[in-house]
Image (cartoon, rainbow, N blue to C red; front, top):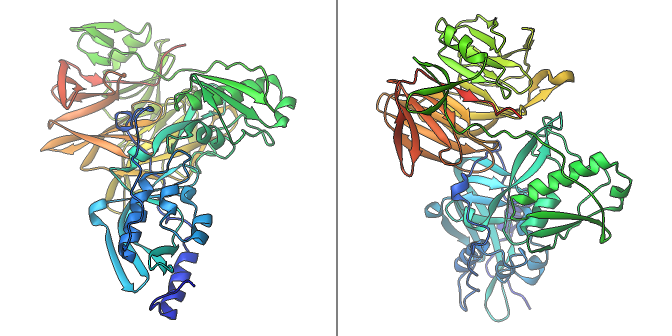
Length: 561
């Protein structure tokens, strides 16, 4: 007979209430994204070791501690079989490790035993991952996880009540869970937009493909679209052989038009590519069906930096040589702006001039005054030609200007913010990032852009806080489709925060006096410009000067097709 020792009924009742209110690990706070690619283990790397089994004679505290450690080993079937050995048979059959992850600080863990057979784990939470693989930032603070244990006939303790999900130290988390991208389309079907998800590497192709059966992350859902129409779903199993994944679709795929099927195939091919798959074969009930990838527009930028120097405006190709942009370079040089962002087709630029106004310059040698308001931040231009502008002291007053200068007041912009230091639209036009101040704290936020007919920006979705920013935000740039770089700091030094939207972040120190930031290439993801005109790129753990005399470091919103 199973015996309980010294468990007071009132304590059991309180724990039952706590557990009922916690069907999974706590998940509160805004979504947070960002793990740099260099931090993600290789796909063929052994990501975990098999944890220890329960030890004979272990105390309740030791059993709970072993159970938590076993969260680092999902096993070959990603079912956390070793962790289940710490549970009673009844709980082992119902416990749901895939319900989520609580990412904590290992050194802050503390165990309390208020009653015999009851253990409370105190943790400092920094993030959570939900059952869809979405990483969510948590306000750093203490949380309590209660566990109830029973003693078996052989006097060994096992856990009979526990929250669903696993607990992983923040250093251990990226070794057990890897970051993948679930791909959606922008509303024009021209760009692929990544939505970061975290899964154990075992069976990752199935996890990634099945994510397309669901919705994008909530903050992004109104800004992207998917070809997976209602009724068409990916099968639970995705076998991979020699890099080729077989994805079985539901029977409804047979009645889908070829364009939609090709778009679904494109989403699968791009999504599974982040899980090491080189080719996708579609089937319905194991019968192959034909599909082709549709053309999508790249958001990569030219390797040479885009700058304004005394010699002109264009690409710095070596030494002080400038390769101009036909038509556009002359007009940019004429106005000598203090900030420049060039459209993907390089036929227009959003600029802020020394007197503070925001203008649109074009390759037809034309200029249009768009925004004369005072204290404007550097403008940004989206792939549909809209120039975005906002005053630093009025973050809610975001204006977007069409090609003809028509003003659009963007609703619901940066709710709760009292100041804004920088703002930039993603190269695919679906998202916008900003360095804002709210509640006396400066942070990096991101929001989805909700558009209407003809891609007119209507409003911003609910903003998501990505990370705190140390010091004043001096610049912001999209590094790639999933990463944002922020330049911050004070008179004593500069800090570059690189935040991947969908996980953690990294930061590096730079010398004082840095004044501008732009996205780079795979060799150097970020470029900086110092106040004295020196251009820097990151090489290893340090920033190396590569050029001098740079008056403005411009940003590119992609490249011509």
